[in-house]
Image (cartoon, rainbow, N blue to C red; front, side):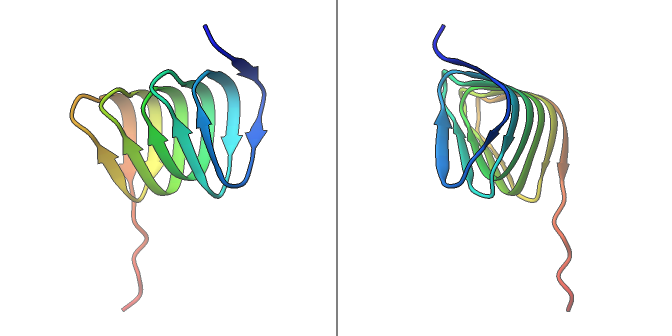
Length: 102
């Protein structure tokens, strides 16, 4: 089964999840969910690279990349979304970029 973490995770820098995390993830940096990784809960990050399973709310303030091995279910909020061929997506998706004043 691998590692199981229940609770909240707040960090700086880059982290990779290859086990299971049940809870909330918060960072102003990058989250990397490996192909064997699973997160159930809320994710609030600047950037995310998802290769595993994510269920819940995923809010990436800068960019979200969903790899071919990924399964994402829930709600996605991001200004930049890259979904690779083969990824499974069952989510409400909102891609909203703030308008820059001219």
